[in-house]
Length: 228
Length: 276
Image (cartoon, rainbow over all chains, first blue to last red; front, side):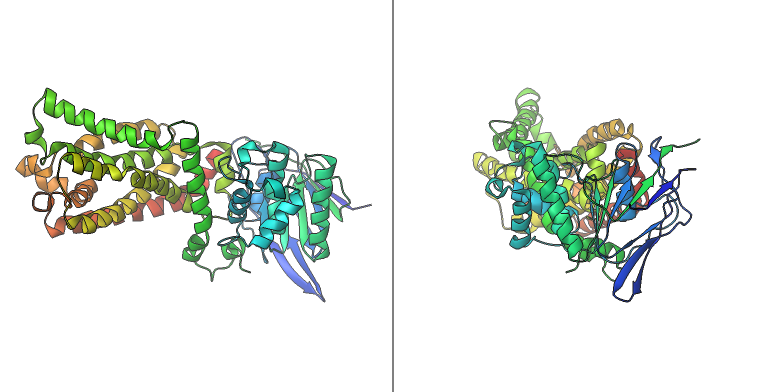
């Protein structure tokens, strides 16, 4: 059974420090508590998050509340600064907010893959190999030139996560990666996650529920409304 | 392969490099925005030309046919004079309107990505610029109608005007985007200010028609120099201002940009929080 850590939010603070160590061949990233906080209006906030991940590990973080998965991911990967404290990371981090918010209906599926790759941090034009691999993983090669507005939402909501997993990186931080889609969609996504882990990448799933696949470790973050 | 996310963490990679790395994304965003703008309408691009063209004709008709005041306002032919003022002005209004509309959950999502946030105001200006380029043939149409051929000054004045206007609008967008997010009421203030700017800028009148004692103060409006640059292609003798006027315009544009960069830097986190 995977060990589970419950973290209670005492206040509006998220205090994190990533540190990479070397133990023989194993690289390790550690998340440690520091002083700091994240406040957004009256939303549920997480706190006292302390955990570490190893190279080639699949970690699932569960956090209640709508959008809190994205918020935590954004803070972890430096897209959003905490109100106080610092987040330090090493290595190449890729964060996928999931959903289809980064996509644009006017662009074709392949253009959207390029757009998402750019938004997730890929510099310059995306190589055709990566584009083809994403399309293959989405099982949507024949739809590549169709406008996103004409495609089913079940496909569109997987584009961001699948693109993120195909970009070169060390840690893939995914918000709600397996929360929707058909059984086949989830199978394809699991396959890619397994592949990344096999290659030595670290995958962190942040969602309201546990992903429907075996994980190395789970971390539960309890969240509640801000106390004034 | 270097990633922007890595660049964010790596102090050796400067902001300029990240900006350059985001060029493909910027291009796609502009494309998507323009597509969204025109896909809804059957006439698509025609509307973006028709709007400013009608505005030019209406202003010309009011001041020429109804009031008979065209000689007292600007250079002749007055129709072309109005066109050279209205077309750059539509770029200003388009960019300001776009910058003040950015809001909501999607804005929060796209603004919390690996792309530097400074790119988003640039997208707003770029969309306005493309629309300006789309209506640019109207210059030639009105020049042909009024039989006023452009001079070689057009090749110098037009690019210089575009560069200065881009700098100015980028600075303005950097101020407006966070301002509207943090203080939504400012949207109404901006709307009023834009109306005021229309009348205090030499769009439908020339600087020479302003009372002499007020003329030096018109240089404090960067649009005075910018509009002059757009006009010297057609009226090289009348529209050309003293050299220091263009220097003042450039300095004003750079000052707005510098203030915008500082303001955006200080308020961007708060802006994103407001969108969340």
